[in-house]
Length: 346
Image (tube, rainbow, N blue to C red; front, side, top):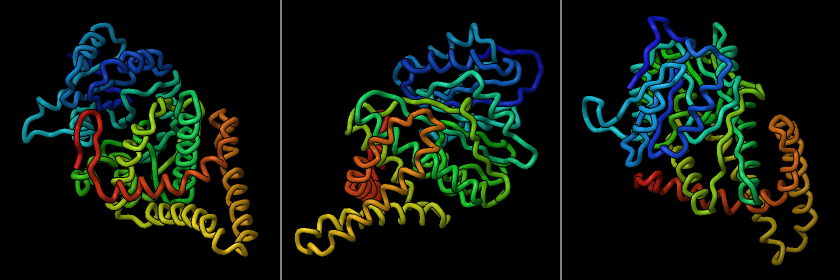
């Protein structure tokens, strides 16, 4: 269902791929109702990816009283072969979007009132892709360790963009030109990979428009999403993320992944070798101290930006845990196959 507003063309189209998100969508839609950008300046398209809950009913009901144009698109109704997954959902939405720029977030995210205005202001004449910051929320050690890890990933992605060597971004907070998406063929070439709707597109757009990639360093643009509640769900999510690494066609993200993994494995290997070769102790201590100091210096401005300076206390814990964690996730990602949102992905 769609509630229409005259013939005015919106500045932005918000795209949301949703599968079984009936419980989360009301909060996200309420955040969109509170945007400072005028309701006539944006439209929202929610794509129902074969949900088995009341996702479609929630959108249809919300559209009745929405101040902005709110449209529901069902993947089950898209003509042609049966399509599923986030990339198919986003491609279907881009095809029906009316605005020159699309802004993407996830159904389980929370937005600040100036989120859309911040993206709109970042869309300068030469921009083709804008990556925004994402913050994990939650209580307890597991949630804060996840938040610290993602903060480091967001900072690494921002640094890569600023240095002209983009490596990563987060699909919960990004925007791009519809014309640029079409110019690089959308997800053609990696559509068979279930994950990576965000980073594959980033790499393709950087190759086509190397001066057109931006990072949105604005506290008002921070998107919040909940950390995974259990270790099992966390590993499933991270394996999904890792499954795309072997399909990268650009060198920068591959180099970064190898560098981070090698550094952490080397530190862990040195510690494990100490009982058999005690003379390594001063070198191992020096390496651990150097790595810890570098991590703290890198993370301090990032955590200050996110107003999470208390997470610095977990840097030593994450440093100890990261080598086995990264190895496990990386190997599982190379093997392929994981369960996500009730689907078994191969």
